[in-house]
Amino acid sequence: MTLQTCSSPAAETVPALPVGATLRGWLDHLRRTGRLTLGSPGMDLVHGVAGLANRLDGTSATVFPHPGGHSVPVVSGLLSRRAWMAEAMGVPQPELLRHFEQACLEPVPSREVAGPPCQQVMHRDVDLTRLLPIPTHNEHDHGAYITAGLLITRHPDTGVQNVAIHRLQVSGPDRLGALLLPRHTLAFFQEQEAAGRDLDVAVVIGVDPLTLMASQAIVPIGHDELEISGALRGSALPVARCLTSEVRVPADAEIVLEGRLLRNVREPEGPFGEFPQYYGERALRHVIQVSAVTHRDLPLFHTIVGGSMEHLLLGGIPREASFLSHLRRTFPSVRDVHLSRGGTCRYHLAVQIDKRSEGEAKNVILGALAVHYDVKHVTVVDTDVDVHDPTEVEWAVATRFQADRDLVVVAGTQGSKLDPSTEDGVGAKMGLDATVPLSAPEMTFTRIRVPGELELDVQSLTEPAPPDWLEGLTR
Ligand code: MN
Image 1: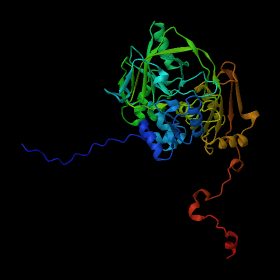
Image 2 (image 1 turned 30 degrees about the vertical axis):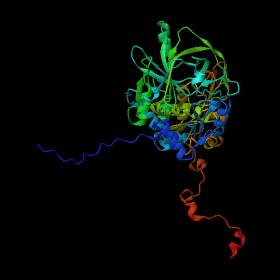
Image 3 (image 1 turned 90 degrees about the vertical axis):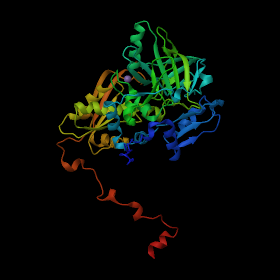
Image 4 (image 1 turned 90 degrees about the horizontal axis):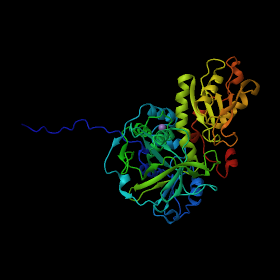
């Protein structure tokens, strides 16, 4: 028998992970590209961390060494620009929404591993503020809040998981107050509570950017958002079983709180500064009892300041992706959508359509208002208007919209409870048709432009004017 000499078989090609597939890799990528700032050591956990993070929001991520004297550093501002999200996914910005939507449609099941980094250290004696540097953000917040914690729940019978971010108030050494809006976490919990059981949960702090974005996907109940993270990274996300429950958590997370949502317990939670730049009110809310804390050696604590760009965009971009896909199912003419910052990335939706028939824009308005109750004002524009540029959208309203003809108002609808101008969430919807009438004479709505302007190579055609520029002109 001869040993075959090894002419190496076609080397197995393992596709490289997108740069946003690990938290520490992403932070180092930001550092290499001049977008990671080190705060002064010992910044105050009460308002100090949030204040500096806000000042750098959208410019740089921030690392806070020894916040409030704590040994665990805080990080903030990981994803505070739309372009950074595309970069983390490894796609050009115009493909951001379609790429995210594709991941939602083709999830990749997670892969279970043993001995994960997130369980290098375990604490059964839980004192949250002693173990973790939990900041207080806005002026009237009740106190310290965990704001970037992925709340993972698992259906005890089916094993299906759900992932969402809920604001978590530190209510005691091992107690969190949770705001559960009427979506999937609440549905999982209500089923268990009705059966007389608590619901096992994990709160995961410090995950990679792709998992962070996946947690905000608007997919039907029964879809584990961690599998969308797997699709975004292009390979199965490593997960690990919690030490005290069956819940599976991202294996490479920095910090994991294991605990239970308590049946038949409600305690005061709030106020808390929210995405509309106002406070969510104090009320009786759900309670999580924390039974164990696990973390990496030398973990990082991620915080998202309420109302920051990171907060607005994390909710906004996945919503845009699902609005785009939802609208296109009914209206093939829809090309693009944008939730603007001025509209808190929730309330103001701009839709671009390739209009083919008169009246279509108003149908799109009605369809868009029905996709999610948060959407309050919808503006529809033509394909020559960039929906991602609020100045362009305003220009279209200024020059293509007549209020007596192009305005749609619907009274008494369900809106966002966090919109203070509503009556407990009930208010009006408005749509603006800022598209050009198909019958308009061609020149009436032709945008001015200088032929060849965009193709000029300005750098090669120009130089800075020298001090003797005036004499120079005549020599
Ligand atoms: Mn869900």
